[in-house]
Image (cartoon, rainbow, N blue to C red; front, side):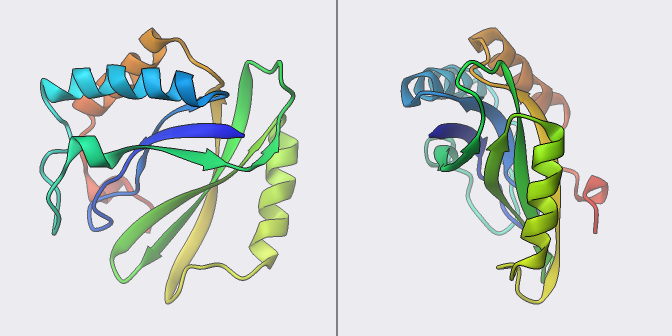
Amino acid sequence: MLYILSRILSPYDAADVFIGAFATFQKAQAARKAVMELWEQGDPYSKQSYRIADLQADLIISEITDIRLDDSQAFGYIVSEFCDSHSMLTRSFLSAHSSHEDAEAFVKRHKLEESPCIGGIFWHDILTTKINPELIDVLHIANRANRHKINRQFIPA
């Protein structure tokens, strides 16, 4: 199992934000606590369209069950599926891989399957990430969010 720490956003503004990938739930919880403490001082996503932001509820830990990583790997490749439908953008974390080539092969196979994206377009992204990042790295990612607030114009349509 791999645990993803992310921030839920209004689908009218942007896709959910990836913060980190962790091999244990305890490491993901520690990272969530650190990000929560940082963002309680100034939440970069406090203003969202058509929804009330709730830092406690929106900073979530989810599981990826489709894992193709070696246990000792420091870096991995996370495959996300984005769906842009009716002016709403959503993101699903699908799988984790030990190589970029394996992730690309997964995306090619997955594109042949029926997408849950109804009435819109979908695409995949392969994110290179450190597995079990140190808390300082997690906070660096969270701090970048403070500088890059939601801006719909940068999201591919």
